[in-house]
Every structure is written in C-alpha cells, then in structure tokens.
Length: 264
Image (tube, rainbow, N blue to C red; front, side, top):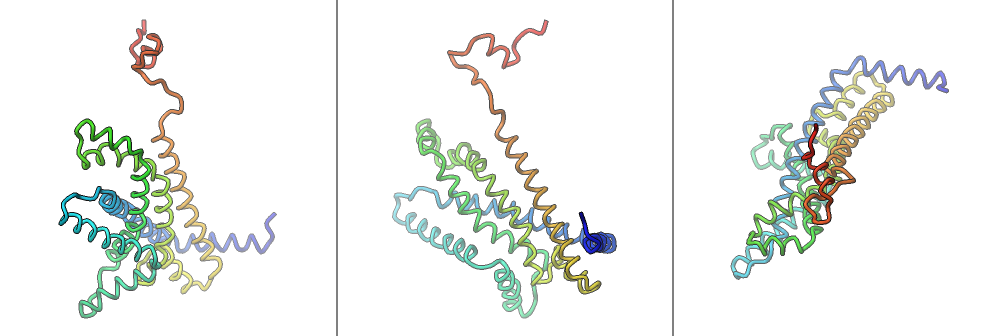
C-alpha cells in the first residue's frame, strides 16, 4: 500500500512529466541519436580494427614492419580509450580542438557523435577480435583448400559467424551507450541528463525530477534489451530442424519438409 507521502511523490513525478515532457522527449531523442549512431559507427570501427589485428603476419620483411607498427598504433588507441573515462575524453577532445583552433569549438552534436563512436570503437575492436578468434581454425583451412583468399574467407565465412557470436556484447555496448551519454552534458550536449538539470534549475524538485529521469532511462534500456533479445532468437532460427539431402533421410520426410509433396 502506498502511503500519503508516496502518493504525493508519484503525483509530483507525473506533474513534472506533464509540465516538462517537451524537454524530456527532446533529451530522449538526442540520447538515442548518439547511442544508435555511436554504436553503429563503433561496430564498424571494431570490425575494421578487429579484422586487421587478426591478419596473418606477412612474409615480406617490410610488410611485417608495417603490420607491427599498425598493431602498435591500434593497441595504443584501444588501451587509451578503454583506460580513461568518457567524460575526460569528451573534455579533452572538445576543448583540445578549441585550443588548437584559436578558441573555435566543434559543433556540440558532432562532438558527441565523434566521442561516443571512437570510445565504442575501442571496446568493439576487442569484442570483434574475440569473436573472430572463437571461430574454429578448420573453417579457415577449409576455405583456403577451395582457393579462397584471406579477405574472402573473412567476408563470406568468418565475419558473419563472428557477428552472430558477438551480438549479446554489441547489445550490452548499446545499452551502456544509452546511459553513458549522460556524461556528455559536460560539453553542453542537450541529452536527457542535461535536460534533467535544466528542469531542476526551474522547479527545484531535485528528487522527483531525477527519479523521473531514472525511470525514463530504465524504460529505454529495458525496451532495447527486449527488442534485441527477440532479434537474437530470430537469428537463431528453429531449434528443431531436419537437414535435407542426407542419404539417411526418408523420402517422405524430405518431401514434406521441402514443400514438395502434393496438395491434392
């Protein structure tokens, strides 16, 4: 049972939502924009870096040196962005650009998209590399035995399987990005947490406002989690199936499963 104080708190939260829903919805829109864009671009960065770092070492001496130099640069990028907070990265990139350009700052929205993308890319790189390593080596050898080069093997055989394997981790990164956009308020990006601070500065209802924002964040992350879990199940396909074409298959079973039976 809700007490009178609890009911008053609920009414206050509902009233804040009623009064300030345009600000809240605007914050949700910017939050989701950056989270979606940053996750997609971060995944693309991760695919490129993860694929590069799993390339076999060239036999040519000069190419080996270039490969090692590339590995060193990419490893440094990964370790720096995984080892420092996104809030610090945002301040360094935003104000570092201003320092190098006589006080001219980057567009705030572009800065937010850039920061989240390169931060996510560092994490995705290791996720993708782990997904590629998890693929059985026999599949590489089988592809080579039929004349496929490393590039075609990766594109047609390895990457599709690795993407399926890493989908739960990508989902987790997406959810983290929804929450981590809140740190971008330090550069003036008008995401959900920024809007919450703005509302509090108007109504002085600190607890009720932040409780409402917490509920909104939970609804966003929980909804996305359910949608992506459903997508994972769809990608898994049916749990019970018959492999057609086996010599041990009965002809009537093959015909029924392939839709080749008569419907008279």
